[in-house]
Amino acid sequence: MNRLIAYAVTLLLGAAWVGHVAGNAWDGPAAQAEAARSAPRPPRIVSASLSTDEIALGLVAPTRLAAISYFADDPAASNVLGHTHEVRGRVTASVEELVSLEPTLVLADPFGHMASEGLTRRLGIPIVRTQVVTDLGDVLTNIHTIGRALDANREADALVASLRDRMAAVEARVHGSARPRVLVLYGRGFTVGTGTLVNDLLTRANAENVAALAGVVGHEEMSVERALALDPDVLVVSDYHADGHARDVRAPPEATDHPVWQNLRAVHEGRIVRMAPADLFTTSQYAVRALERLAAALHPQDGAPAERP
Image 1: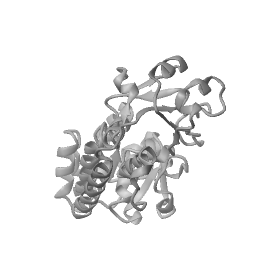
Image 2: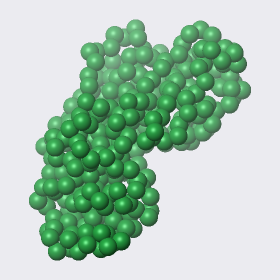
Image 3: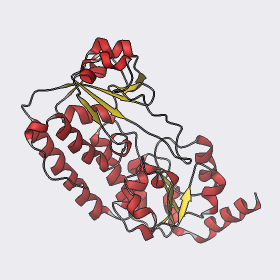
């Protein structure tokens, strides 16, 4: 506790940047980013979530970051494995661990613990939170938010412009193609419906999400019987074997091996698309790469463009 008090005093006395941003750190992403934009470049940036890890590392040099989340090292979930060795620190949801890093700015997604928010607010640590992602438009907004906070507006603008071009290219390529009826399965038989980034990716890839058409909202469990009734043309599956630092997410049964799933027409006819968790579940700029891969898998006859990072 003495260490926390000492750190709080240090922040109050010595960090003008902290004082500038902290007063606006709880007014939402736009206000947070605007407060950070006009402040001096923060010397100790900590990213506390995988999505902010990926966005920050796409905008600034790894040496700008004092720490990133443990998820960044998860080979199943991370899209930035090639850069993580250049960042020394790692952080979990532990408040003590976060404080020990002495950050002057924390980047986080919308799902952090309220206890952590309260403590960091009392200590005066500015925190910039991204917004909930339900479509690619939210991803682009979050890139701008992080870009402003890191004094990387030019880099954020360039990245967003490139992503918009790639999104438009995908939608132009698949326009007019037959729309396959798709069911997404992950975990132990969970699927995705409306209000999710994956649903937006399917729509932009010119496919129908049968779960969304059936009234699924968000993430719901999908029984074999219900899947059979939906009778999708294509089954998209993603297996996530979490490591010791990640969430307890279990892999789904192999659709091609489980005898019950053989009754599903898409399985019986071999129309299964396997997506890596780092593609299907990212909420950073790498979601556009996921869109490209999904569109290429669902519309192979259209000829996919060269792979982009």
